[in-house]
Length: 334
Image 1 (cartoon, rainbow, N blue to C red):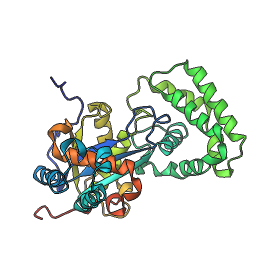
Image 2: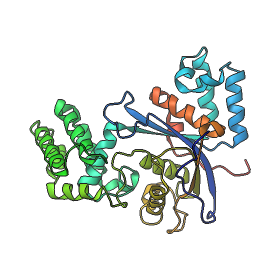
Image 3: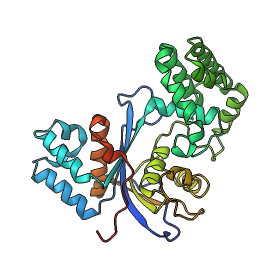
Protein backbone atom coordinates (compact mmCIF):
# COMPACT_ATOMS: atom_id res chain seq x y z
CA UNK A 1 0.00 0.00 0.00
CA UNK A 2 1.33 3.44 -0.95
CA UNK A 3 1.91 6.06 1.73
CA UNK A 4 -0.22 9.22 1.51
CA UNK A 5 1.38 12.04 -0.47
CA UNK A 6 2.87 14.77 1.70
CA UNK A 7 3.44 18.49 1.13
CA UNK A 8 2.22 20.64 -1.71
CA UNK A 9 0.52 24.00 -1.89
CA UNK A 10 -3.22 23.92 -2.59
CA UNK A 11 -4.66 26.51 -4.94
CA UNK A 12 -6.57 28.63 -2.42
CA UNK A 13 -7.52 31.56 -4.64
CA UNK A 14 -8.58 31.91 -8.24
CA UNK A 15 -5.73 32.44 -10.68
CA UNK A 16 -5.27 35.97 -11.97
CA UNK A 17 -5.21 36.36 -15.74
CA UNK A 18 -3.24 33.91 -17.85
CA UNK A 19 -2.05 30.65 -16.31
CA UNK A 20 0.19 27.82 -17.46
CA UNK A 21 0.22 24.32 -15.98
CA UNK A 22 3.54 22.51 -15.83
CA UNK A 23 4.71 19.11 -14.61
CA UNK A 24 8.14 18.81 -12.97
CA UNK A 25 10.71 16.33 -11.76
CA UNK A 26 14.39 16.41 -10.84
CA UNK A 27 17.46 14.26 -11.24
CA UNK A 28 20.63 14.15 -9.16
CA UNK A 29 19.03 15.32 -5.94
CA UNK A 30 20.96 13.81 -3.05
CA UNK A 31 19.62 15.68 -0.05
CA UNK A 32 22.34 17.43 1.94
CA UNK A 33 24.98 15.14 0.43
CA UNK A 34 26.13 17.86 -1.95
CA UNK A 35 29.87 17.24 -1.87
CA UNK A 36 30.07 13.45 -1.79
CA UNK A 37 27.78 12.50 -4.62
CA UNK A 38 28.43 10.91 -8.00
CA UNK A 39 26.23 13.58 -9.58
CA UNK A 40 27.95 17.01 -9.68
CA UNK A 41 24.82 18.67 -11.05
CA UNK A 42 21.13 18.61 -10.28
CA UNK A 43 18.61 19.10 -13.05
CA UNK A 44 15.04 20.29 -12.61
CA UNK A 45 12.93 19.70 -15.72
CA UNK A 46 9.43 20.91 -16.52
CA UNK A 47 6.97 20.43 -19.39
CA UNK A 48 3.65 22.05 -20.26
CA UNK A 49 2.21 18.96 -21.92
CA UNK A 50 -1.33 17.85 -21.26
CA UNK A 51 -1.83 14.23 -20.25
CA UNK A 52 -2.80 13.01 -23.74
CA UNK A 53 0.30 14.62 -25.27
CA UNK A 54 2.56 13.00 -22.68
CA UNK A 55 0.92 9.62 -23.26
CA UNK A 56 1.41 9.97 -27.02
CA UNK A 57 5.09 10.84 -26.56
CA UNK A 58 5.73 7.88 -24.25
CA UNK A 59 3.79 5.58 -26.61
CA UNK A 60 5.95 6.66 -29.53
CA UNK A 61 9.15 5.95 -27.61
CA UNK A 62 7.86 2.50 -26.72
CA UNK A 63 6.45 1.56 -30.12
CA UNK A 64 8.31 3.63 -32.71
CA UNK A 65 11.70 3.25 -31.02
CA UNK A 66 11.02 -0.10 -29.32
CA UNK A 67 11.75 0.98 -25.76
CA UNK A 68 10.17 -1.13 -23.05
CA UNK A 69 8.55 0.62 -20.05
CA UNK A 70 11.50 0.01 -17.70
CA UNK A 71 13.88 1.51 -20.29
CA UNK A 72 12.29 4.94 -20.04
CA UNK A 73 14.48 5.75 -17.08
CA UNK A 74 17.29 7.93 -18.39
CA UNK A 75 20.17 5.55 -17.64
CA UNK A 76 18.67 2.65 -19.57
CA UNK A 77 17.23 4.96 -22.20
CA UNK A 78 20.67 6.33 -23.09
CA UNK A 79 22.16 2.83 -23.24
CA UNK A 80 19.38 1.40 -25.40
CA UNK A 81 19.61 0.43 -29.03
CA UNK A 82 18.90 3.45 -31.21
CA UNK A 83 19.22 5.81 -28.25
CA UNK A 84 20.80 8.63 -30.24
CA UNK A 85 17.98 8.74 -32.78
CA UNK A 86 15.34 8.44 -30.06
CA UNK A 87 16.98 11.16 -28.01
CA UNK A 88 17.08 13.56 -30.94
CA UNK A 89 13.40 12.89 -31.62
CA UNK A 90 12.53 13.29 -27.92
CA UNK A 91 14.28 16.65 -27.54
CA UNK A 92 12.83 17.93 -30.81
CA UNK A 93 9.34 16.93 -29.69
CA UNK A 94 9.80 18.94 -26.48
CA UNK A 95 11.20 22.10 -28.08
CA UNK A 96 9.08 25.01 -26.92
CA UNK A 97 7.22 22.76 -24.49
CA UNK A 98 9.92 22.18 -21.88
CA UNK A 99 12.51 23.87 -19.71
CA UNK A 100 15.59 22.54 -17.90
CA UNK A 101 17.25 24.28 -14.95
CA UNK A 102 20.77 23.03 -14.13
CA UNK A 103 22.36 23.44 -10.71
CA UNK A 104 26.09 23.00 -10.16
CA UNK A 105 26.27 21.70 -6.59
CA UNK A 106 29.52 23.48 -5.72
CA UNK A 107 28.28 26.80 -7.07
CA UNK A 108 25.03 26.31 -5.19
CA UNK A 109 27.02 26.00 -1.95
CA UNK A 110 28.94 29.18 -2.81
CA UNK A 111 25.70 31.11 -3.32
CA UNK A 112 24.52 29.81 0.05
CA UNK A 113 27.72 31.00 1.77
CA UNK A 114 27.40 34.45 0.22
CA UNK A 115 23.63 34.90 0.49
CA UNK A 116 23.33 33.45 3.99
CA UNK A 117 26.53 34.50 5.72
CA UNK A 118 27.28 37.85 4.06
CA UNK A 119 23.69 38.98 3.61
CA UNK A 120 20.36 38.14 5.23
CA UNK A 121 19.06 34.58 4.72
CA UNK A 122 15.89 34.46 2.65
CA UNK A 123 13.91 32.25 0.31
CA UNK A 124 15.28 34.37 -2.56
CA UNK A 125 18.83 33.14 -1.82
CA UNK A 126 20.41 31.25 -4.67
CA UNK A 127 17.94 32.56 -7.27
CA UNK A 128 17.89 35.48 -9.69
CA UNK A 129 15.85 37.33 -7.06
CA UNK A 130 19.04 37.84 -5.02
CA UNK A 131 21.18 39.39 -7.74
CA UNK A 132 22.94 41.86 -5.44
CA UNK A 133 25.18 39.12 -4.06
CA UNK A 134 25.72 37.22 -7.33
CA UNK A 135 29.00 39.03 -8.32
CA UNK A 136 30.54 38.02 -4.98
CA UNK A 137 29.49 34.39 -5.46
CA UNK A 138 30.86 34.33 -9.01
CA UNK A 139 34.18 35.85 -7.90
CA UNK A 140 34.65 33.28 -5.14
CA UNK A 141 33.63 30.37 -7.36
CA UNK A 142 35.95 31.48 -10.17
CA UNK A 143 38.92 31.33 -7.79
CA UNK A 144 38.18 27.81 -6.52
CA UNK A 145 40.95 26.07 -8.44
CA UNK A 146 43.57 28.22 -6.75
CA UNK A 147 42.58 26.90 -3.33
CA UNK A 148 43.65 23.30 -3.84
CA UNK A 149 42.47 20.89 -1.16
CA UNK A 150 41.61 23.81 1.12
CA UNK A 151 38.74 24.74 -1.20
CA UNK A 152 37.02 21.41 -0.58
CA UNK A 153 37.73 21.66 3.13
CA UNK A 154 36.13 25.12 3.21
CA UNK A 155 32.95 23.90 1.52
CA UNK A 156 32.83 20.84 3.79
CA UNK A 157 33.16 23.08 6.86
CA UNK A 158 30.23 25.16 5.61
CA UNK A 159 28.09 22.05 5.10
CA UNK A 160 28.88 20.89 8.63
CA UNK A 161 28.13 24.37 9.95
CA UNK A 162 24.61 24.62 8.56
CA UNK A 163 23.60 20.97 8.59
CA UNK A 164 20.28 20.59 10.41
CA UNK A 165 21.60 17.66 12.44
CA UNK A 166 24.98 18.94 13.54
CA UNK A 167 27.69 16.56 14.61
CA UNK A 168 29.45 19.04 16.92
CA UNK A 169 28.32 22.09 19.00
CA UNK A 170 27.67 25.40 17.21
CA UNK A 171 30.70 27.09 18.77
CA UNK A 172 32.99 24.35 17.52
CA UNK A 173 31.39 24.33 14.04
CA UNK A 174 31.86 28.09 13.70
CA UNK A 175 35.48 27.79 14.83
CA UNK A 176 36.19 25.07 12.25
CA UNK A 177 34.52 27.10 9.52
CA UNK A 178 36.72 30.12 10.14
CA UNK A 179 39.82 27.97 10.41
CA UNK A 180 38.98 26.63 6.95
CA UNK A 181 38.33 30.19 5.74
CA UNK A 182 41.71 31.36 7.03
CA UNK A 183 43.48 28.43 5.37
CA UNK A 184 41.84 29.33 2.06
CA UNK A 185 42.83 32.99 2.43
CA UNK A 186 46.47 31.98 2.63
CA UNK A 187 46.28 30.93 -1.01
CA UNK A 188 45.67 34.57 -2.03
CA UNK A 189 42.85 33.76 -4.41
CA UNK A 190 42.71 37.28 -5.80
CA UNK A 191 41.35 40.60 -4.60
CA UNK A 192 37.69 39.89 -5.36
CA UNK A 193 37.59 36.41 -3.82
CA UNK A 194 39.70 37.42 -0.82
CA UNK A 195 37.35 40.33 -0.18
CA UNK A 196 34.41 37.93 -0.01
CA UNK A 197 36.20 35.69 2.48
CA UNK A 198 37.36 38.66 4.56
CA UNK A 199 33.76 39.85 4.76
CA UNK A 200 32.65 36.79 6.71
CA UNK A 201 32.03 37.89 10.29
CA UNK A 202 32.00 35.36 13.18
CA UNK A 203 29.26 37.20 15.05
CA UNK A 204 26.94 37.30 12.06
CA UNK A 205 27.66 33.66 11.24
CA UNK A 206 26.86 32.57 14.80
CA UNK A 207 23.61 34.53 14.62
CA UNK A 208 22.55 32.88 11.37
CA UNK A 209 23.38 29.39 12.62
CA UNK A 210 21.46 30.02 15.83
CA UNK A 211 18.36 30.82 13.77
CA UNK A 212 18.42 27.65 11.70
CA UNK A 213 16.80 25.42 14.28
CA UNK A 214 13.62 27.36 14.98
CA UNK A 215 13.26 30.36 12.63
CA UNK A 216 11.09 29.23 9.72
CA UNK A 217 11.77 32.44 7.80
CA UNK A 218 15.23 30.99 7.15
CA UNK A 219 15.02 28.32 4.42
CA UNK A 220 17.05 25.12 4.75
CA UNK A 221 20.53 26.17 3.54
CA UNK A 222 21.39 22.84 1.90
CA UNK A 223 18.10 22.42 0.05
CA UNK A 224 18.57 23.14 -3.69
CA UNK A 225 15.09 22.10 -4.76
CA UNK A 226 13.39 25.26 -3.45
CA UNK A 227 15.49 27.73 -5.48
CA UNK A 228 15.28 25.36 -8.46
CA UNK A 229 11.49 25.44 -8.24
CA UNK A 230 11.53 29.24 -7.95
CA UNK A 231 13.69 29.53 -11.07
CA UNK A 232 11.44 27.14 -12.96
CA UNK A 233 8.30 29.07 -12.04
CA UNK A 234 9.90 32.43 -12.90
CA UNK A 235 10.97 31.10 -16.29
CA UNK A 236 7.50 29.86 -17.20
CA UNK A 237 5.80 32.94 -15.78
CA UNK A 238 7.93 35.59 -17.44
CA UNK A 239 6.05 38.10 -15.33
CA UNK A 240 3.02 37.54 -17.52
CA UNK A 241 1.13 34.64 -16.04
CA UNK A 242 0.73 32.45 -12.99
CA UNK A 243 2.08 28.93 -12.89
CA UNK A 244 0.34 25.83 -11.57
CA UNK A 245 2.82 23.08 -10.77
CA UNK A 246 2.38 19.32 -10.68
CA UNK A 247 5.47 17.83 -9.06
CA UNK A 248 6.76 14.38 -8.24
CA UNK A 249 6.60 13.89 -4.49
CA UNK A 250 9.52 15.49 -2.65
CA UNK A 251 9.83 15.73 1.11
CA UNK A 252 11.58 19.09 0.74
CA UNK A 253 8.45 20.70 -0.69
CA UNK A 254 6.50 21.12 2.53
CA UNK A 255 3.41 23.29 2.70
CA UNK A 256 5.13 25.77 5.01
CA UNK A 257 8.17 26.20 2.77
CA UNK A 258 6.07 26.51 -0.36
CA UNK A 259 3.83 29.10 1.26
CA UNK A 260 6.87 31.19 2.21
CA UNK A 261 8.32 30.78 -1.27
CA UNK A 262 5.02 31.84 -2.82
CA UNK A 263 4.85 34.97 -0.66
CA UNK A 264 8.45 35.87 -1.37
CA UNK A 265 7.85 35.69 -5.12
CA UNK A 266 4.88 38.06 -4.97
CA UNK A 267 5.39 41.78 -5.27
CA UNK A 268 8.75 43.11 -4.17
CA UNK A 269 11.23 40.58 -5.50
CA UNK A 270 9.56 39.22 -8.57
CA UNK A 271 9.84 42.13 -11.07
CA UNK A 272 13.64 41.96 -10.96
CA UNK A 273 13.39 38.44 -12.35
CA UNK A 274 11.67 39.68 -15.49
CA UNK A 275 14.19 42.25 -16.64
CA UNK A 276 13.44 41.59 -20.29
CA UNK A 277 9.65 41.55 -19.99
CA UNK A 278 6.83 43.82 -18.97
CA UNK A 279 5.68 42.70 -15.54
CA UNK A 280 1.94 42.16 -15.86
CA UNK A 281 1.04 40.42 -12.61
CA UNK A 282 -0.26 42.65 -9.80
CA UNK A 283 2.25 43.30 -7.01
CA UNK A 284 0.42 41.08 -4.54
CA UNK A 285 0.05 38.11 -6.92
CA UNK A 286 2.72 35.43 -6.90
CA UNK A 287 3.82 33.71 -10.11
CA UNK A 288 3.47 30.46 -8.13
CA UNK A 289 -0.27 29.83 -8.04
CA UNK A 290 -0.10 26.41 -6.41
CA UNK A 291 1.65 23.05 -6.38
CA UNK A 292 0.14 19.57 -6.42
CA UNK A 293 2.22 16.58 -5.38
CA UNK A 294 1.75 13.34 -7.33
CA UNK A 295 3.29 9.91 -7.59
CA UNK A 296 5.18 9.90 -10.90
CA UNK A 297 3.81 6.43 -11.67
CA UNK A 298 0.36 7.97 -11.97
CA UNK A 299 1.18 10.98 -14.16
CA UNK A 300 2.69 10.60 -17.66
CA UNK A 301 3.58 14.32 -17.75
CA UNK A 302 5.84 13.87 -14.73
CA UNK A 303 7.31 10.75 -16.35
CA UNK A 304 8.31 12.84 -19.35
CA UNK A 305 9.82 15.49 -17.07
CA UNK A 306 11.68 12.75 -15.19
CA UNK A 307 13.19 11.38 -18.41
CA UNK A 308 14.19 14.85 -19.55
CA UNK A 309 15.79 15.68 -16.20
CA UNK A 310 17.76 12.43 -16.18
CA UNK A 311 18.99 12.88 -19.74
CA UNK A 312 20.03 16.46 -18.99
CA UNK A 313 21.96 15.40 -15.89
CA UNK A 314 23.82 12.63 -17.66
CA UNK A 315 24.48 14.61 -20.85
CA UNK A 316 24.22 18.32 -19.96
CA UNK A 317 25.96 19.26 -23.21
CA UNK A 318 23.00 18.15 -25.33
CA UNK A 319 20.59 20.54 -23.63
CA UNK A 320 20.62 23.46 -26.01
CA UNK A 321 19.44 27.02 -25.59
CA UNK A 322 15.94 26.09 -26.70
CA UNK A 323 15.46 24.09 -23.49
CA UNK A 324 17.35 26.47 -21.19
CA UNK A 325 15.61 29.68 -22.23
CA UNK A 326 12.29 30.69 -20.68
CA UNK A 327 9.47 29.08 -22.68
CA UNK A 328 7.47 31.45 -24.84
CA UNK A 329 3.81 31.77 -23.76
CA UNK A 330 1.55 30.02 -26.24
CA UNK A 331 -1.93 30.91 -27.34
CA UNK A 332 -4.20 28.63 -25.26
CA UNK A 333 -6.14 27.88 -28.42
CA UNK A 334 -3.11 26.44 -30.19
